[in-house]
Length: 64
Image (cartoon, rainbow, N blue to C red; front, side, top):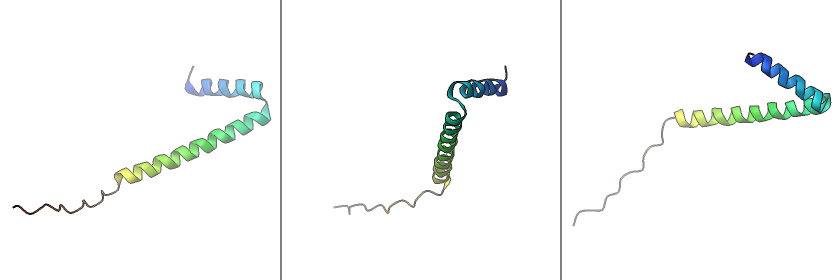
């Protein structure tokens, strides 16, 4: 069984168990969660790949 076949089987089983209204609501929540995850992932990647902040100047104490 390929991934597409397994996914289709899971969706069909969910449709039979939950019914069309609840399945539609569930898929909507899954899509929303995936969108949020993708947004956070993009934000994290852009933060990591951006230039690092300039380091603070090194204030050493004068030698006695």
